[in-house]
Image 1 (cartoon, rainbow, N blue to C red):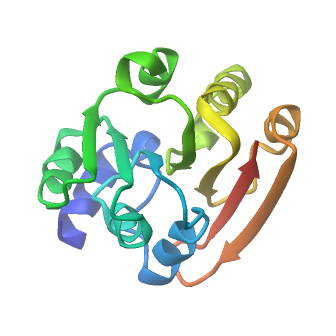
Image 2 (image 1 turned 30 degrees about the horizontal axis):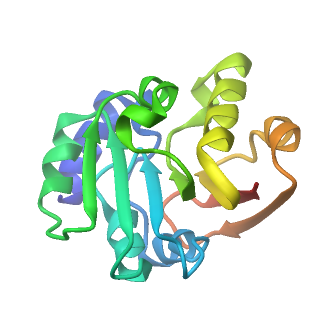
Length: 182
């Protein structure tokens, strides 16, 4: 997907896209490195055009599986262009899908990566999302997400035992990358 097309989608609905451009290669690689090398099942929430998706697939073992959850049709079209048998695409609202994890095969997940913009959600919605991600992760699994502002500290502390963060300035909008371990 071109930068121009991404920008058109972002301007039209910034509240759900949360970015003005796809992530840089530095940023995308840093996010993908939050995944354990032995991860077998990874879920990406809000993959957008698939820049990070491609990096995850690059580090994912051959027997691994990546499930992406995306709401926007334009992004789903871009994701379908990624030719990799380990990739499964679910169209829908992440909150609804995470409410029925068994139905979508989201059990004992090794890692969850999220690009959804938490800034626009209420405290209750943030609490619910963090609790739902914690529930589907296996023991030792990780929940990584990126934001322009350091958000969710209290929600993470309520559910996860180990929390770390990084800062990646080499992006059109710099990001904080948080990783919480179950």
